[in-house]
Image (cartoon, rainbow, N blue to C red):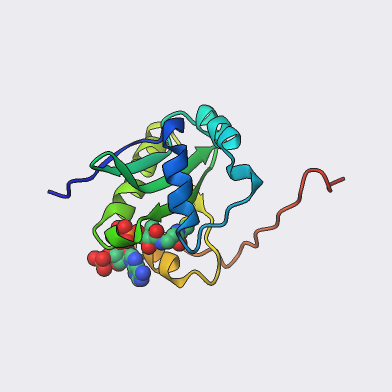
Length: 144
Ligand SMILES: CC(C)(COP(=O)(O)OP(=O)(O)OC[C@H]1O[C@@H](n2cnc3c(N)ncnc32)[C@H](O)[C@@H]1OP(=O)(O)O)[C@@H](O)C(=O)NCCC(=O)NCCS
């Protein structure tokens, strides 16, 4: 018995999740990761994001959202002392089950190209690196 449980991410989990992300190399944080923006994200995507809780403490978290067609996973992190116990897989499985239930067939994952640990994890769960795609981003305040 693992002892930890996976449940929906609530805004009350924000401080613990933010501390976990800050402690996790490989998770990029910016102004979109404020309590207010995460609250808006959770409200737009009810029940899709999850946390792993152990003895009332948040030891894993993932954000997941969908736009009606495709989904995106970000900020998957497990506390260092609890890694390699299947928690990352359990968090992703929860996301995928909920997405399937909403009729979403494909989910993209944002990973820094030099994050070999995370790339190894995603390979393990069956994700395919898309060498045919290049991610480009544009800031709305600097755009056309
Ligand atoms: C990526 C991460 C979430 C994985 O969480 P985890 O709970 O350790 O993952 P799991 O225990 O479910 O791992 C399942 C499998 O993935 C693979 N895997 C996990 N970590 C790995 C690593 N560091 N190197 C290679 N393969 C790895 C293994 O095949 C593992 O199975 P095994 O332990 O039986 O060998 C965790 O390492 C983490 O928080 N990293 C820092 C944050 C980060 O980079 N997040 C990615 C943003 S998308």
